[in-house]
Amino acid sequence: MDKNREISSKALQACATAASKRAVERAEARKIPYTVQEGRNIVQRNADGTKTVLETLPKAYVKPALKRYRVA
Image (cartoon, rainbow, N blue to C red):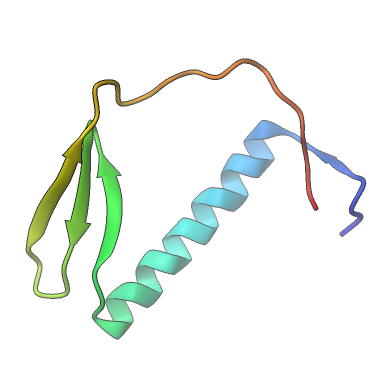
């Protein structure tokens, strides 16, 4: 991939989503806990199926200003 190529925010989001899914699948396969956001809560999911709420956020989602990203 060309290092100077611009990437759209949708494409960047798709890459991040795919990477996150792979990371969760690997953590589940190795039976290690992982942390995710569920609504306003930051939750740790354990291999035995239990969930622990680590933090509650005041705002769940903040819409950022339009930005351009470059793949490094």
